[in-house]
Figure 1 (cartoon, rainbow, N blue to C red):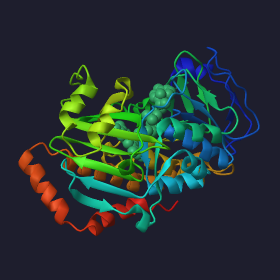
Figure 2: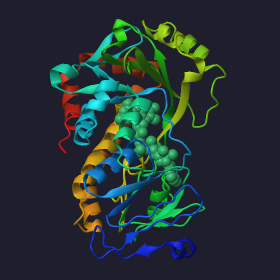
Figure 3: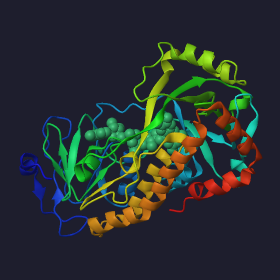
Figure 4: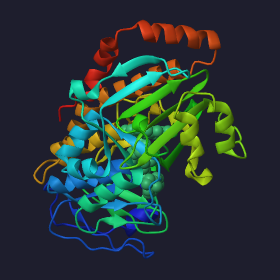
Length: 412
Ligand SMILES: Cc1cc2nc3c(=O)[nH]c(=O)nc-3n(C[C@H](O)[C@H](O)[C@H](O)COP(=O)(O)OP(=O)(O)OC[C@H]3O[C@@H](n4cnc5c(N)ncnc54)[C@H](O)[C@@H]3O)c2cc1C
């Protein structure tokens, strides 16, 4: 597992650590991107500065374990479209001290609706009555709130991790390895840390391409609710994302890698132009280059997320289909639980295994629930879609609430 070249280059200092017997690390890294010398406190390396990695950095610091964050992108730039910050995500954000920052930047969402393309209501979730505090926010605004809370100067941008070893080395591309008490792989769905622990694993194509966009749009029908519209082989959704801004998305069942239409906005105006208001106007209001495609993936859930001093977090651990808007929420939950397991006087390996024990079952259940929800929303036959709508409409909303309650009500 260990790369002899990189391992020999790593410099370990006997300063004590998360487990007292373990040397702390010093990171005399070449290449300019990472350059720091540490001494005196326990250390962690977080790989990836997405929502999961930033949350992990904040949680670790709060637990008294100062992290550095290795990020391959030369600059941090989140998208101008939004995401749903579900009630369990808000609970996690509160634990991290980020709830106020998100509430100030995002929009409180009072209800969620599922409708058919004519606008008939199939399901209503009254978040307000349920006490499920939910927000819509631009990803860039969430990232900003998180960056402001990341302590010190832990980010090492433009640095690619190529794997990690069980004894706590983060191997870097073109630079010396960093040796740490713990390594947290938060490097997303194609995680290099995961691959180095468990080898190549199946990445399952989710069966659809999602398009996401943000636009300035102020309309009564977009101010306080998320609406998802289920059609045949795909659908459309929209909701608020901060004052005067709306996030919308659509998803289409296409083969993996299918070529994108030349003018997506025109394509969507054709496809959704007859759907209920304000869908056509929302698309019309959007700058063409503000609409971005993503193919969606997940992986079969795995029961083991770590080995030795290494663990996984967020999409690296449990990539899921986006259908119930839980990927980032689960990453935030991971971070909170990780922070509560880690502490300056704990054995690192024990702490990581406790984190995994407390998280694996729940996160994997959400991966499965996301996949099930995808099957319902993306039905490709008109007859099946019609039947689905009839069943959905007849089904009491409280049954949907009962299915979601366990996810929404996270107790750290
Ligand atoms: C269409 C769609 C809609 C979604 N909507 C929602 C929603 O409404 N609500 C919700 O909660 N979730 C939603 N999600 C899921 C959510 O976006 C993800 O689960 C979440 O962003 C994962 O965060 P992460 O930090 O684990 O991974 P990522 O965001 O993928 O971050 C990984 C980071 O690691 C870096 N990196 C990767 N490899 C390396 C390497 N080798 N070395 C160094 N750095 C590396 C990357 O550059 C990146 O910055 C949605 C997902 C999709 C696809």
